[in-house]
Figure 1 (tube, helix red, strand yellow):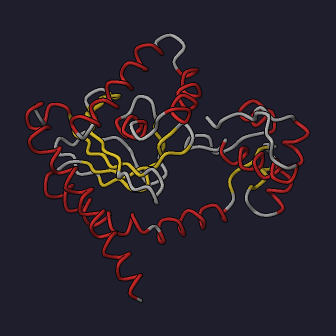
Figure 2 (tube, helix red, strand yellow; figure 1 turned 90 degrees about the horizontal axis):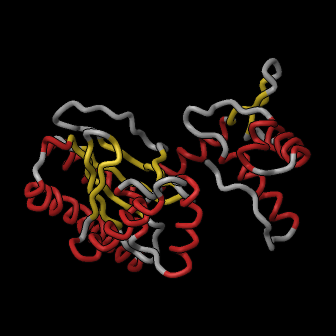
Length: 266
């Protein structure tokens, strides 16, 4: 769910942009068509603001209006922007062949995601699970930060106000068991700092380990390896899969450094 509108110190023009983006964020996989009332509920914006901004988004092609239903859908320009992101992502270009090699060679799933508000968004997912355990994950798929290894690895990179602010935004998702979720986050942060990776099983039968790329000049990229829980013992996770994941990140860092060196010479 997109973060609802809050008081902002932005200028009026900037607030309009922020609110328009909030409307676009309301559309997710499985939520392809939304009316004004639903957008009001999801964004917390006044109905008059929704009406004004959706009209502007329709006029510019970012939303399409369905007259018979009185609802909106995302427009083609957004797909074009997503395609441009994938084609021009330096990290993705370097990581894709390495991820595919590991996934195919070891019959495991390898993913790359980046944080976006309270979710992690997959940039790439190579699915080669040896047990045939299927979960539909593609580029653009979103998973919650607080209960996944991807998200918990990302949380290990935060501290102070940034961490506490995000945790407060995540807390309403778990009104009954936030104490346990918070404890799991703390354990995962400790695991990343001590063992190098964190581990989670947020869906039955699937285990995942994750590690942040950790480059200060890059967005908060996180890589993960996921697999059917019965396929690997705890010892194998430590001795086989963890080194694979660490090696993947090291190769990405080295290749990125080489690219930067060549750019400096040119």
